[in-house]
Amino acid sequence: MMEEKHVMINGKNVFITKKGAGEPIVFLHGGPGGDIHLFPTHFPKHFLCST
Image: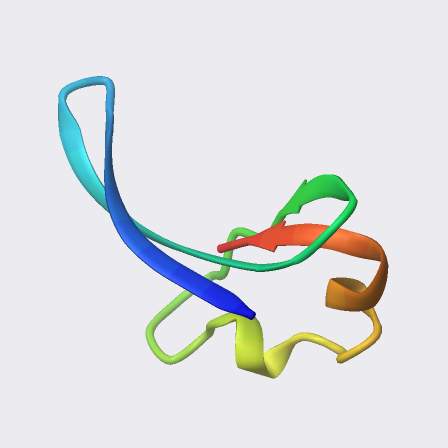
């Protein structure tokens, strides 16, 4: 299951996507078009992935 939402971080509105369960891991993409769908599929099986 994937969750998408806006959160406030240091006074800035940031859109995040969460997928998976377990220990959290954060992916920071380097440009437009990079999202959780481009990461290997095994990460969400073992971690709570946030982009």
